[in-house]
Image (cartoon, rainbow, N blue to C red; front, side, top):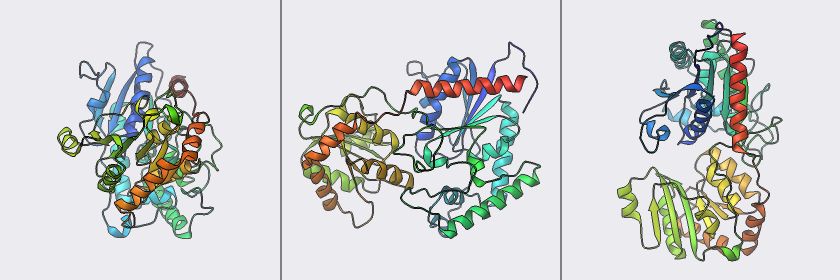
Length: 420
């Protein structure tokens, strides 16, 4: 991986890349890493699909990007809309990669070539990727790469994929066959470009160093994981729980993405309880938030105060994202979870298994009346409230700054190795 020894006056450069965006979680992981790297005197270039991401990284006062940081547009993957592909079951992460287009050798080649050109232009000393498999394929054996992510996107190494759903023991034969098809396709693409083939498909989502930023309960591969996890970077710290008697009566918090399929039914259920509710709808416009708000339900697109609102609430209704799930556990607050997508479903089962949450479905068999009944049962369940409060003392995921220090130190080691 050596590119020659750099002059002592040269700034070390790190490329941080994401290939597939699913909400803001990937960006929210890369942002604190980039901040920590700049503090360690690395220049950082962030490659993200789409546009208009600068505001996330900009200085809140000046609105400008910090010195030493630039943002560029990542290569855009083309993903098939074929119903026969979109409707495939997802039993392992190989199926996720299949849905993301990796069975199409021509498309995989186009992605690898695009990332290769970008890396050649940026000339980074180290690459950091979050759900960036094509970036990994383009850099293997050339530039040292660190992969970060939640457990969902980083299966255990040196073996075929294990089930995403931790309550299942084996991957179905059809899923295993798709994994072998993907491996053959990708290795053909790599061989055509004189790149080293993969031993296992999982190699394309793991780096020269790999860090899972998650907790035990939210990691779908927890029964197979042998490496130490890092604390999630997008988590608030120092949330102080309150006992049931110290909370605000008849108060709820809701946290959902705009476009959630059960949004209207959840609003109806909250109204039926006659509780006050602070609701964040991620991505909602200020105009729509104001139009949808009532005297008792205050809707906003702005972040919720995890330290103040969550410990004061009687319960929180959310979509199963890792941040809000962990924050609610730390706050000791009962949860009603309405997961959208497999990743949220899997992590939500981990929360439910702790005894302080109930899951709600998104299908037609979950009308507003049924959601209302679940919410009322949770609010009346004093034993669940006590369990949630006790669980707040048991949830510990490590110190965030130590995880960031680990990544910065690994970058420094890679740069040192590359300059020898």
